[in-house]
Image 1: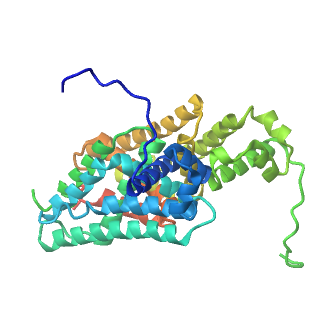
Image 2: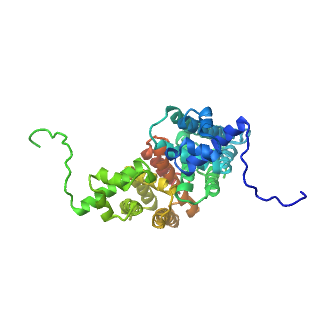
Image 3: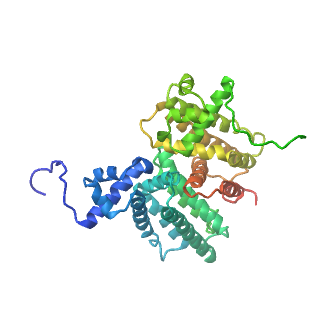
Length: 208
Length: 208
């Protein structure tokens, strides 16, 4: 491109289209809930981070719990869009593609793990949010069980207890995303590769 | 025992010996930090929970960070006392005894995982506490590596990457204790038995 090098300009408050504004609110809410703590962040803090009037947030979202609900729904929708990425592959390849997808989405998932953990310790409980979190884990367990069962049926995997093995993978993902925060060692990609290696190991694979 | 059945009495504030009082403060601090959030709990809250004057806590502990430090040191000492429980056993038996010890200490470890996670997201950081948490994970990794290496050397375990396998176990424990909170499903004992079964599976064991 010709002309002078772009200089970092002072951010100008823009008049955003309604959908872009709704998206901005969800992004800032996810960031603030994750960087701080669900119970410590007010709707006003989120409005300030977006550079908009707090009344506008209440126009979109009834209260903080409904905003949190939309943040989670939005994040989970983004994640679940990728669940089908490995369709048509062998069970082992589908499982590994699904695991690696978590590494690709790591920045979002680190925040999601943080807000789900913080929320779960907060009072009062919200039934809708509780169902969203439970539904996320059910969907994860179901994906893993289906993939493992297919691999066993097709002779690709050894006969393992599908429910227990699915939960082992699911807990390992929880551990990986917990560790990013608690251990402050960002090894997500390596940790997920170790899980992928487990898929190809004699623990699961019938290929020798 | 003869006599009337004991009736639950209204708790009477007792004059405790200094060591018992210091222990009570640490117990209440662990409970409050875990049930609420490190940053949301004040030294005054802890004093009230103990039924003592806040000045007395400051007599024992300089500030909240030092109190948190002692809570963690106390909890980790309790945990680390059990690290030798499997000495004299085969590597597989030692590993399983060590894993099951975490189920036995679950109520304390659930709280420890919670306060380490919350603390890691809090500001400002405290160098001493950061070192305690890092030291805990190093000690865990070292125990696992040593145990795995011994099992391999003695022909009990298959030849696996000791560092990666140790981290896999360590992350699984993190996942198990994270899940108790985030999923609200208390399956610690079952989840640890699945890990024990992995120790005896062809993934690790050479026994067929």
